[in-house]
Length: 208
Image (cartoon, rainbow, N blue to C red; front, side, top):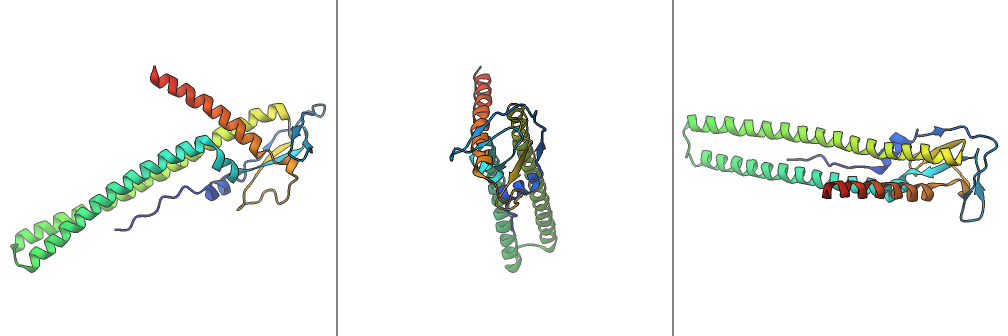
């Protein structure tokens, strides 16, 4: 029995979110700089960017959700494979009984019908599980992107950039950008700090 691989691809996610452009007009009299490694500064009114694929790889919330999703997908796959192997074994046993003449025609027809129904049920279950996992994968990504977008909106209230663009290795919204305009690491650190607070708060409520 073949099983369709369940892949949570950062590249596909990045392509779907490449249109995440937050155009937030900055007050002209506000100039809060962002330091870069080479001493150059991005200031209010600049168009800055972040590398979304890098951000996703380093974002703790994404890593945690992805790990939980992959564990569930693996459990589903293991269960389906177990049922498929059992069905295959029963089919071979049935064929062996037929070849040896150990079943009456009536019994053979009944078993054949039962095996065909089991096979159909297993195929339906596999399709249903795949659909459920696809939906959960989409919800997972929506949660992550909502957290990123919400953080960027709050972040830009303080920094007042004209726009924050996203870029990835696969989809270059920004073909070339000065290092001072790359805010990826700053956003990663901020997002992880916010996520740690949320995760710790949730853990405390669970303990209580």
